[in-house]
Amino acid sequence: MKSEKIRMLSTVCMVLLGIFAEAAAFAGVPNIAALIYKYDDTYVSTVRNALSKAFDGKANLTMKDGEGQQAIQNDQLDVVIEKKMDGIIVNMVDAQAAGGVVEKIKAAGIPVVFFNREPDLNVLKGYDKAVFVGTNVVEAGKLQGDIIKSLWDANPNFDLNKDGQFQYVMFKGEPDNPEAIARTEFSVKQAEANGVKMAQIGETFVCNWDTAQAETAMESALASNEGKIELVIANNDAMALGAIAALSGIGYNVEGGSKFIPVIGVDATNPAVDAIGKGIMSGTVKLDGEAMGEAIAAIMLNMTAGKAPLDGTQYTYDDSGIAVRIPYSPYVK
Ligand code: CA
Image (cartoon, helix red, strand yellow):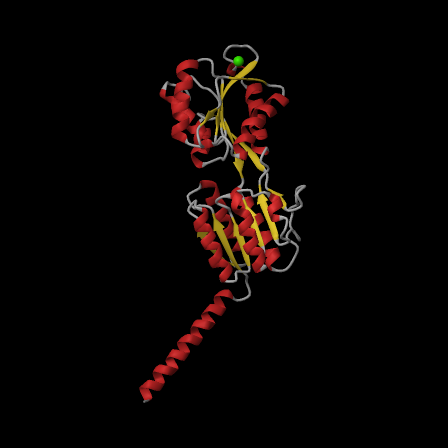
């Protein structure tokens, strides 16, 4: 009997200890869930690290990998709503599915910050505890246009045929992606607005943000236009590096080599920054993932504390009244 009592007592103690341990872990700080579209994405990884850092000691952060599948993310959403999180951060897998996501979160009354992959903002406007943190979709292209202007001015030898125009080839991410469309259009428009006469060679190469596809496309461009291409513009660094691989295959853009064609991208990935450092790539545009993570955390902590989302921060809304835009910056040697 005695041992039975001891066993019961110890069970009770264990349960109580468990409750206290849980209370200690969650004491005083909000529980935040972050649903990430996929972990295997260089830029989003930067944001994830920044979130962990920014919430450290200020919130209990739980992150979930959506693995690039909206169905997985939907299940994760159901789980975190059921766990009654104090705040939810959503990096949509499929931005078009945001309507259903925000409806569920609204029904639970939980504050939400969407980031990076931009939903139709009208879908979010029906919920007063929803904020979007993103970038300005035309800005990356415009900054590429500014880089083109400085390259053109600083390097008269880039005008191989001396016709006063910059003959370029264009690598586009995806046909209908808003960022790909804006970067393709505004890089050239901004260069022209800066006074550079731009002349495209061949069709725009759609290479799905992919290095290998861009390398193949650049090989074919070089086969018919070697010596005529004066500039390579790519929607992202992965494709820029594919173009450089094709160029180096025929002796251009080799470290310490004599033949060089300027290549520019977007993202400032580590390999691109390395290539710029070696002088085999000319420039890129940096998405500041750290700044984005800091903004998301600051806004979320305000909301979980019952304050206005931008209270006491340096951030402002754009014309939508619901979105905060984190600026890009040019990156050159
Ligand atoms: Ca020229």
